Image (cartoon, rainbow, N blue to C red; front, side, top):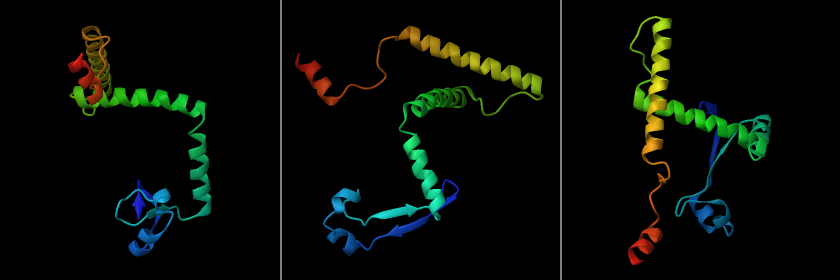
Length: 136
């Protein structure tokens, strides 16, 4: 089995065995299906994966990752809304100017959105909040 370009060994327990197991609620998320695991083929790869997972819980890693999340969101917005993936121009100098103008357009869009609604949350209110506002 391949996940994200890496080889894994897939282990699936028998349905009857898994459903009869007394500790099933602790390990299986599926309601009716058996537990399935994707294992790395060597101990070294597994140890590297475990080390990386522990490292991801540190404040330093999360601080560095927060920067990456912001960058990825910006790139995604530029690709989706402003067509950054493909350039309209030929030649490196014109392409560079096109990218600069695209990023400028993205910044103008973000500033306009911020000025239009600086305090409004983009998340929809919960059902409980909507009920409270209709009752008051």
